[in-house]
Length: 280
Image (cartoon, rainbow, N blue to C red; front, side, top):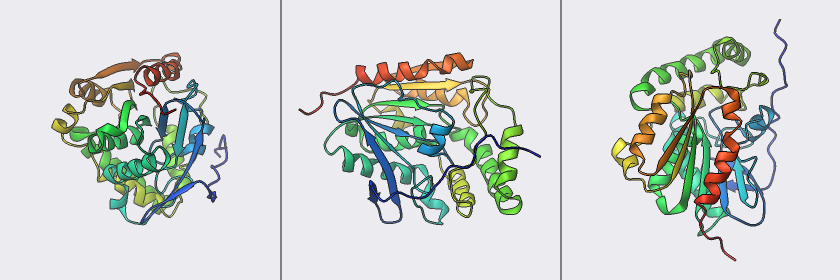
């Protein structure tokens, strides 16, 4: 019998700070009281707590910054509706822009997003380019032509949860091949989404995609793109297309885990290089 490496993250909601929206309550935290404004976004089925468990901290080497972290709708300590269309990337981008305006009113921020978080940023930045001083797009997911097959995979995940339970989903993920640059000591974790909501979140991910290429080609915001090899859900081809499209982008491809361990320092350099002058 499989023995899990860690217990599932606790998802009891805190009372503050939160941002209440029409159909969700976003739970967030803020560290630092001076310097550039930064917002960090997690990936699908993850959360702040889950990223802490698996030691995913792209902003871990950021000093002298104000760092906003939050759980996306339906994830972690944030609430969400039972409507798949409410989990598309444009809706997540709308949440992000509302939260940034709430926490950093009138300021530019540097967005740091992993997977779903990077896709959220690529909807939010074209919608409000003046809100962003820079973007860090970490392992961008399948998009455009590769999104169709991934959407079918998400539907399969939803069915597994509904028919076999979340443990079966976790076991399948554990047994699947992993990118060679991923942390070999990463613990087994459960999705940080309520079990009864998880199939809806998967189906919402299956329905969504990036904006048209022409929209991204006009995005005048500096972008650092961090990719790794041999990951069908986060193919290098996505990162290469984004690098070709975004007018001011840099692409870094990791092949080993030591390569990935260099990413936080790259993010710190990117944030401070493109940081706007802060008030006061």
